[in-house]
Image: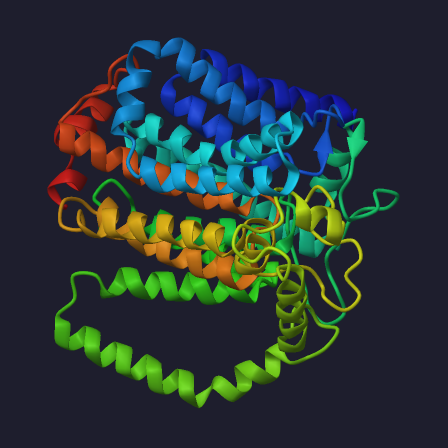
Length: 455
């Protein structure tokens, strides 16, 4: 029975992507990559996962239904050069390490698309749809997700994750499915709902928290509804056990609060935070120095040494796509299986250096810098401008501290893509093309909404 329910949900979301509006298509994509973990698949070689169906299916439907606009969307998409530099670094790393092997180039290209394809998917959505309307759909989904997170702790087990993974023919995740999966430990409660890892769940919650905190003064939202959502997100951030997620969410809310404040208040608050951080730095060090309680400073030192030795033979261009998986034996959810001393590569710096070298690492951070600058130059045009560079800064910090776990990059890229598309639509003064406003109210939102006036 549970297997039938899982497949009904899967094919219902895929159907919505095909026949639904641009807004419905995006919400189905977002829900699909959250609900279905990376560790499940239909085929092993080539790997065909539910998340692949959602991403490639979304891009295929967009190319088919909006083919007259797709070239214009591609030309309008910003930062093509930094992204092409990243792809070029990946290709060069594969070529100089593996030679001209079609299989390796295929793996390299697919890894790139499945990392940055979500950015373009979200971008084309808000080029033709109301962002406010999409956020209202995300509100309902977020409430349900948070309730599931609370029930996971109360029931002492992740029932949705377990039953979803059992429904697929291939499972290569970290947890055993013989019993109900649980991430709760004696030293820390941890919830992950249907994401791959509590840290991935923390990434999702952090991005959603920042997105909805930015809506506090918007007339389209009732403050009581937002307060309920803030409480649910805060509780779930705590029960996720993701220290990076909690710190980044607080820092992100702080950046949003500082926006449009006087320079004197900004300097005063930054000074207060600095002195508080100095006062509590010893507490933080003690917390991250505890052994056998998740990530620790000694574990990070071991990871740094491991990275240093792995790049000795090829520090400039790295060892090629997937080298860390071969050496470190990762499961499909991005977690190490043999993690006795090292515990994984808990920073994007370590993995990128090993696979793509210093050139790849420079290209990765160059893209982040360019995206921050792109958003920052538009900080006065709309609320999406300042929120964009704030989310990019926080997500970059998150991935630097905790790395890419599961599909946590997709969560950040989807939200960033929505904001990029919204800003481009405002700049071009374009109304939806094929996906016309569903109601008269949404039409007003697109043409002359109060949130645009609030920019």
